[in-house]
Image 1 (cartoon, rainbow, N blue to C red):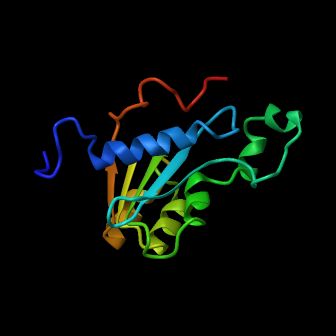
Image 2 (tube, helix red, strand yellow):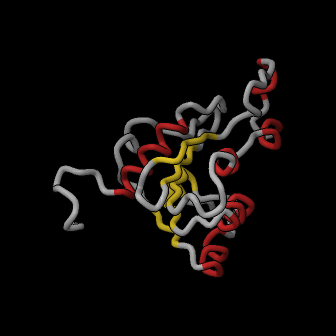
Length: 155
């Protein structure tokens, strides 16, 4: 335990993962909810984001009927998050799912040094990208909300 932390204080990885998870609950995607949160070098919250449609866009109810067709229109949580900060401002990012290859590239381009995630994503090249750029990519599965609010729905 960090000497600056009290026994009842939530550690930073669990704190930022909880923020990302809470953000994911705002996603309008009925099949998969993904959230992300960013902290600065002092562990202050820069912002939170989630996967979804362009802000303000209202899809017709039929849009959500096809799980596969809607995917190409969904903006990823990480991309929405990157729109909230300048390069080098965010030091820590948490994502409820391991970033896809493109999102990992964007996070690295924005100077993020540590990325926490909960759910693995087998199709992602994130581990290789993190290794190349010296970014920490760390799985965190036990945090508040993780057991109580599922983000992947079996529909």
